[in-house]
Length: 482
Image (cartoon, rainbow, N blue to C red; front, side, top):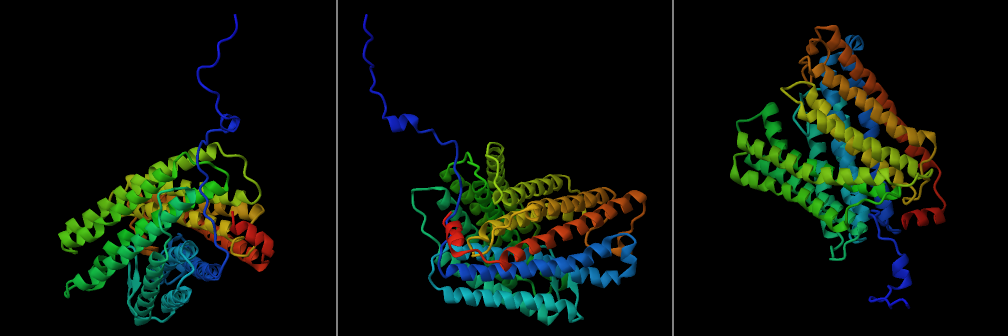
């Protein structure tokens, strides 16, 4: 008996042999035009800020380490160093790297205004750093943006804000249009544009708070309320930049993320949607009310968690099934894994915060360092596209892990000491370390901080070594088109 013919026609050979894609490699094409020079300028501002913050962090670690803190004029030195360290390592470093990414993401129009924005931001950052050596005034340890109440610092902060405002305006005007044909590159571009929108809302919140502040307030209460709303909005900026970095670095490591570009775009949109609670909080409640503060805190927790968890899990799964990284991708993979580990540690610590003690800085150190490591990985990836050498070798591979290990020891020491009630934002004798366990905890914090400082300085060394030997034009062009 002869075989009966097939009921359904056979599919085309090409279709039958084509494997079903198991995920998406998220990569972003880097332009090869005048935007590269502007991006290099923002990178240099970020590196300079990181170097400055590292120098001030040495004073912070010494002023909190038992034994060594007896040799320093701790009370005044600690608070001044903490203000400048936080502003340089978070505000200036993050926004400078955002400026680098937004410059590459947008169209090449209005580049002259981009240089004006960079100049203003650089001048403002320099003024803030130099104000630490002017003397006088008071160090106000306000959340999100601590300040020195000296005219040079206030002027520098205002000039920096004007530069960032111009940068954000240009980023939104030059942002690529979002079509319906989503791909990995389009999703990353949308994430960067969402970060620009979040920053615009943060600047609006700062201005709104300034206009609505009661005239009777002064000192810490004044700056705490002034920066509370905008500071919360900025957390969305940092989160969105980190998520873009995680996806991009995973793609550069050959990992195929099991999230479609449409779903990823939706995650970015959900994170951005929570930012719009900020203007509602200003309309619904007085800025000095408990309800205003609570609503902003709730929005930050909701918006961040909705996007972070699924994207983070998808990246981890993709990395587990990714091929072995080559010499160029190994530093990127190290930065990505260490970033996710530190951010997760900071998130877990946040669950156990109870009262005002050093567990609070342990929580935000973990999260902030997670963002920092992700941006460090993007710098490593973008160096060839910017015309420099790609970081390779043991130093480049080991730097993220050393920095992460030091920061992990730092925050574990803070968690340990926080369990004994050691207070935050104090140093020296004000810490009131009563037991050997408290001293050991802060000693672990000091040792981890010292290791982290070395890891941070090694990042600068790796980048400067790559910049010292420019890549050949063909290598840079090839890297830019990846």
